[in-house]
Image 1 (spheres, rainbow, N blue to C red):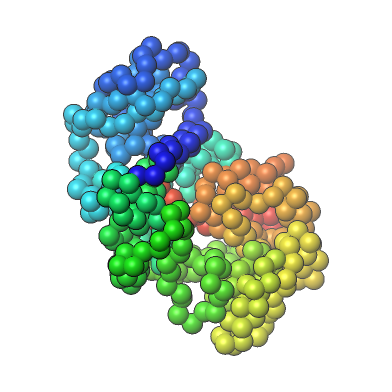
Image 2 (cartoon, one colour):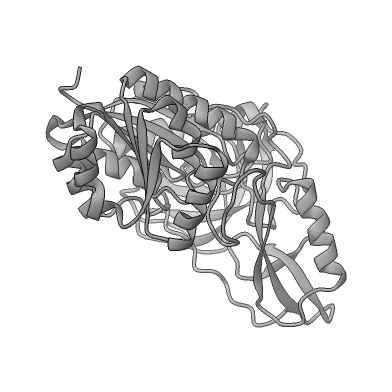
Amino acid sequence: MGKRRRRKPAPPPALEPDVTSTDTFSGKVGDIVNLEITDVAFGGEGVGRHEGFVVFVPFVLKGETVETRITEIHKQYARGALVHLKTSSPERIQPTCSHFGTCGGCQYQHASYEEQLRIKHKQVRDLFERIGGQAMDIVVHPIACPQPYGYRNRIMVRTQYNRDTKAMNVGFLRHQSRLVVDIHDCSIAEPELNKALTKVRVDPPRKNGIKFNLRIFPEGWKLPPDSFFQVNFHQLPNMIHAVKERLKDAGTRFLVDAYCGVGFFSLSLADTMETYAGVEVDRRAIESARINASSMHRTNGSFIEATTEAVIQELVDTFQAAATTIILDPPRKGCHASIIEVLRKAKPKQIIYVSCHPATLSRDVKLLCEGGLFKVEQVIPIDMFPQTQHIECICDIRLAHSR
């Protein structure tokens, strides 16, 4: 199947002090070892120990005992593959998808949905304590998704020529590999996308290595073909409700929607604010946001084509810092240090930081709160990505002396 290239393994999650290896590994790659799984780390891998040395294993749950084949050995940790499940967790279930464990898209289909939420809750709490320097109790229990399967409105499909079958594989990357799994349907994708995938498979692209998106566009929203929009329509009402509650609690009157895209947050919340401003560097997204505002009759605000750091201070000064909320919804890599510095100087009453990567969120929260300038009121995880390692978080940050 094409040139066999293994994907470079991702680095391990940040190790907590009590799971840091101090001894060297006594074995070698290929060894079979017995492990008791004591935790599930951020990223979805189970944590076990062999002679005191940390070993990460995918597709296992806390409390299970497993036989593991060592696949990688590093200075402070090793990785292994599940060979045999000796003792199962009561939360283990039969995966819905026949590709689970081979396809790299899902990490938790072997866990009950209640257990998935418990795992993600603990992971977010741990990250906020360890990286963000925050108390664990600020993180509330995750908001469950009303539809844990068939929820994704966008999937990226790849092609790769299979030398064995002499046909084109159409699907997703394998777990820990650059090879493509041939997929007939995806259990976490919306049914309409699986119908589209079937059509693609009937007449697949002839070229090797093609990547393309299949997506369902949100009803009532104008957006460019490649523009970002939340991938789970079923959770959007819960997300907006959670943010509205935090706005109400803060009592602010003005809203700045940074990284606003096509205006999802600002237009969904405009009726609760005196005025709003959306900021986005992508011209096509801003043009769409203005069209959306007009069609939704959200006339109490405007959209600005600019970088966040260039206009945030002026907007906060105009709106009055003591009555302003800033919504941050940056890419997975988080905010640039210059934006953090501008926010610390601007001193808005409230920052609502929305992130799909709690590790970078925790890092940015620590920088914002340095010296006691800001304080985290609450972190609300919202499960936008059931069956996977990912979790969205809504973090309510307040100016420390605003109350």
